[in-house]
Length: 359
Length: 279
Image 1 (cartoon, chains in turn purple, orange):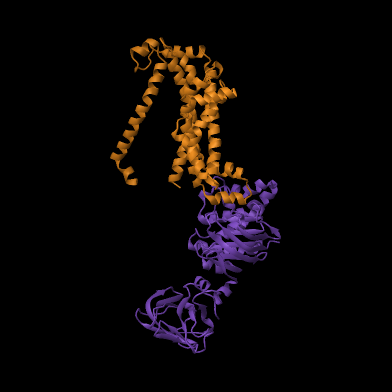
Image 2 (cartoon, helix red, strand yellow):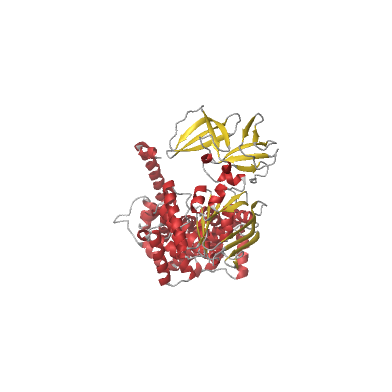
């Protein structure tokens, strides 16, 4: 079995920089896990520690029931796909795929069978005798995947494999990756900074910030109940709106910016006097003023996306920027005022200091 | 760049300059070649004239073939040059890989130490080298020369190659590690093929001084059976009489092997220079 067990994993560089701190996660056999976060959050470092390309400073790493902390990358039963493909430039596609296997001393027939299988899966039959530089970006990344597949590893590691491709190809390869995961049934660990990729691919997402895990959960959990303000901001596009303020004594209104305050139909699940950040997703604001709260938006500009219209503006009376996502093509003019409403269930409350979720 | 190339005047000036330089560079070689096929009298009467029916003579070549063990000298020079180049490239590339790839204490200092040899001529240490060779019994062996030339070539080799090896993508080496390749396999099968143009550069830079060197053969290996070509040719240069036919013929023949080696390496060299441009 190929479950991956990470306990208290940490990485400190010789200079004293702490890249990763106390990361703990249990990854089930056959699970598609996506590590996501802004650049520099330590997600790639974790992947490289799993691969064995970085030494582990603290903690334990188990693949199956084997502790692999001190094993060489080649002995860990893993395969990795890199952002810039990392194909051997002086070898043909076939050589690229078989080189590792040959080195392991596998019999010729076995190597050929595996390559045939992988090339069929990835539709690379016509390119076997080409050199990497004769291939397009998408084809190169498929070859890199092929090189991983033929190793028949327990765990596949992906380090932003789609970042160098154009948007259309990315969507296509995303679907192929998902299908590949289904077919192989192996454990996938995938690093990306793109939240759309994370949401669409992952069984579970590990979202990281500044070397620590912010939240581990199903994509929809992260979207519907983000554990911290960071997660709330990171997942979803356009990003979640935040209005900062102090809860009034009756807990039914939020004092924003001294003079202005927002009134709620139900009491807020927070202590009076508590400074909070109120989060509302752009798509959860409606033009119907019904619901738990009504607020006014001064329109700055409008983005027509076809399927949706995103209205950007400011909360009237306060200076908080606010975006609303409306269905279909909507007309509107800069400077006009729109009244918006939102359901109580769609409000996210975070402590202003710690960023932890309150409701 | 494109505009400069399209302008015929620029093109003319560029080619003119290159042709002029080529003529100047090749002129001595040309003089040696034509005079090696002339009689002694003709050499002195009209040094710049081409050999004609009257002045044509193979006497120089005949002297060289007869006198002295010319083929042995040839062989010695070739062994020393190729052997030295082999060790310079092997050890230079290995040291360069270590400096470029691994982070260890003293990496920087080690790099500087190895680069120091570029600035200090090895001939300063001739006396010490001779003493060492005497102590180890290597005097009058080809090994003495190979070892000295290897030492002489290493600093520049390490300097150039480590710079190139730093440019080989880390992901590529890591992909090899994940494929289960040993560090040696990564070095020999992944990195070396990619820095081949740099290796060719180092080889060309080292080859000519080694082939042409007179100093160390004279001091470390003057015995008849280990004489190199340059040293062997000296027998024709006397204090009072010099057999110019023989000297010029010997020099003409000495050009050939080094020319062949250069052609082999320079193809790599050009490929390396252009591959960066059109990538």
